[in-house]
Image (cartoon, rainbow, N blue to C red; front, top):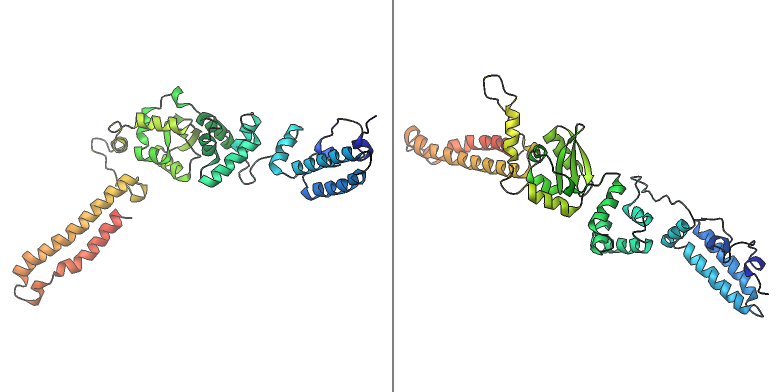
Length: 337
């Protein structure tokens, strides 16, 4: 009759054979203390070696190997998580800072990825500078839609298929082409006093501020695939399709006084988009240049000829020196700040 080495040598009561790794190492189930796991392994290893000679030599060696495999499994963080899940443990894998579960956890739960594939993708992401999401897609472990759905789950946001809806023109008109391209986003419509915007990533404060400034409402993000958003931008923001600046000007002019034209204050530089800022600066540079040119011509053809001809001052651009800098400074404050 074969000996039950688990019961006779390790004191494990009758039950499943072979026992799980925790029972084998005489640990409480789901023990996480690595030092205790190794300590129990060394103690049991020394005990089983007593039977390494004699009639139970083969049984002893097999059990020693089994103990070693159990110890290596429970001291490998990634493998232990997967093993514990297989035993029914609920793993708290939320990020300590954000309180979110990573998108990979949802994919592992769904059986789409294994823990080993997640580890490989994370290593690839670290090497290449990609996000884990992009690494998974690049390695063809999942497709872009699956990645976007999992990322939406991580953020606690809805996922949207842009093929299923048409954005409202009014929303598209409010957000400029350069903004949607820079942030890879697409305004969809206003809903419950918030603006629904399809995004590739979690929106930053810059986009939130831009939406609040232009719509007068806060942003409500939804997640879509990069390809679908870029295709929609190409479709709805094709050259010549939208004149956002004109649309904004008309909206402001509607609030003018009765029977007269509305007066709109010039937009501060801080609230301009990048294209508007560049145009504004070019105008400022031209004004500064023409200020000095005009004053120099005034000195040469007016003051030098009619005011102080033949004197020392006739050869010095007095007005350009005296008036040029303060005028240039005023233009700088208006057009560059």
